[in-house]
Image (cartoon, rainbow, N blue to C red; front, side, top):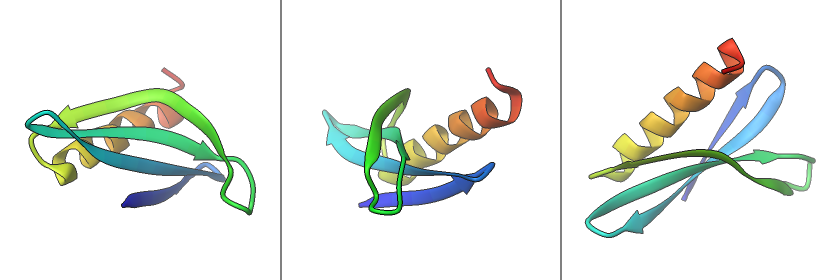
Length: 69
C-alpha cells in the first residue's frame, strides 16, 4: 500500500513494508503522469506500526521540501 502526496507541485509516494518486528517507510518521487518513480529519495523511517513509520517519513519529507534541508 502506498500513500500519495503532493507538495510544492511535485508528487511523492510513501511506500511501506514490514521489516523485522516493525515497518519501514520509504519516500519516492513520481516523475510523470504514468506514475514512474525516480527511485528512493533517501528518506526512510522505521517504527513499530505502518502508520507511525509513514507519518515519520512524511514529516521528514515535508521538512526537506519546506526548508531545503
